[in-house]
Image (spheres, rainbow, N blue to C red):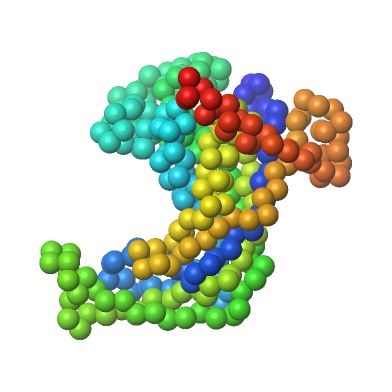
Length: 266
Ligand SMILES: [Zn+2]
């Protein structure tokens, strides 16, 4: 097995996500004349916060912050970012054969590292797996209320309300709290800096889900706990494998963010 596939370090971030306003996390898209404007729910009716929703939001923040931190982001579109990366479809088409002809795993990894932006390397691209994982939120506080709000259909050409065209959508009530878990596999210093920066945004408050332009989905991340296991440290490895004990990471994330900002400062 290649060394690249081995675990050397794993980081676990946990905390609570508090919604200060009502929120809508559904399967439909805002502004569409959708037939289904319900929120995602469990069989018992309680709201669901999918890991994929969290990851999408987290990645979008990472992309928007990358330039300020001195990191590369292809934004999945070289015509927008001016940066080539295997995630960009046009670039991928021309480079895919080259990649497929590479013989060993080590050569493939080096090739990917050269041709992939910092964001895709952490969050995944069509040619490489993600190294950051978001679990579905675990509901820990909810007042059992789902409300129905009504929206007015907007005419895209005139940007005015279309008379008589209305739709309903569901929201889960303010004050709902989910416990969330994020895991990072073999993060390098850059990865840790990116994650620290986005967590700061989440702690400062952000918007999640649909209808955010109507003030919905205001959330903040609290009670952050960061732990890690260093697989090359035998005591840590033993504690983790035998008793699931991880080591308190202290200021590991913020230290890496500070270093990245110092490099950027020059
Ligand atoms: Zn990329």
